[in-house]
Length: 162
Image (cartoon, rainbow, N blue to C red; front, top):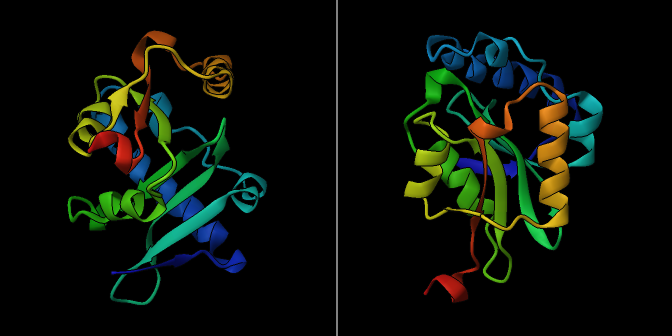
């Protein structure tokens, strides 16, 4: 699977991938998450966005990352449901993982394809969050995400994990 930087013209399509990837939350009893707006075009344009290109030559998944407190922070990772469970999300995370930097994210604690999935990839829950992660979690709460259902996670640099 080819992974490359997203092109500006692809950003609206990435919003559609994010919307489609949110649909499983409806079946998990979280329709408000399924109905949530995707990242804005402005927010996507401000991030480092990588896409996974499918056989048709178009993006089937993306990851948007930025710097938060010296770590590579995953703001969003979305895989179109038609390409789910093929390791594409893991490949995107691996692609943005750099040996010298931690990778952080915030996610739902008990949704199988959220925290439990990231644990399988080596992420661990962060008890003492950095100021930047704390701000992200406050912003999530202000948008209605229950802090009790959320967790900050980190994948430590390779030299620390070894």
